[in-house]
Image (cartoon, rainbow, N blue to C red):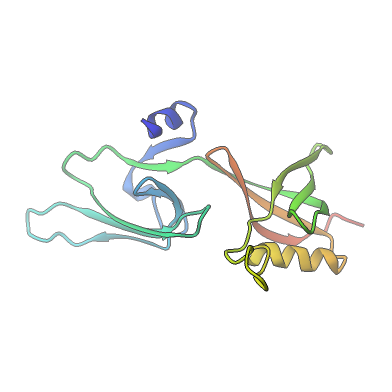
Length: 169
């Protein structure tokens, strides 16, 4: 039911196995993951079924998921989330909350994206943000002009990269 609702909203697509590869995004046991492993397994017998082994971390939680999909009997496609990536110029950063003020290509201000909290953010001495978030905060504090890469998936946005903004004079 959850996939049907997301498919109606065009957040999920069904694809054939050759469209899924290492580094791409795919649902593993119902969780949106970035694949670390994607390999066709050899048939167990001469008349055996083709199978696809997939494994990767959940893009929101980092928890690893793994599955083997039967590609012959009753196969109707693999669910993948619809994703888009965009780079925005970083204008400001709230050091406490991690929320970013970003400049869109049209010159509008986008303020609904935040850095991902680190796994030990609530513990004394724990990093407040993940590795990318800490890099952005450090480089921003050093006065670097930055472009932040944002991945949109399933109606949520996630900071996945940072690069030097060469457009700033």
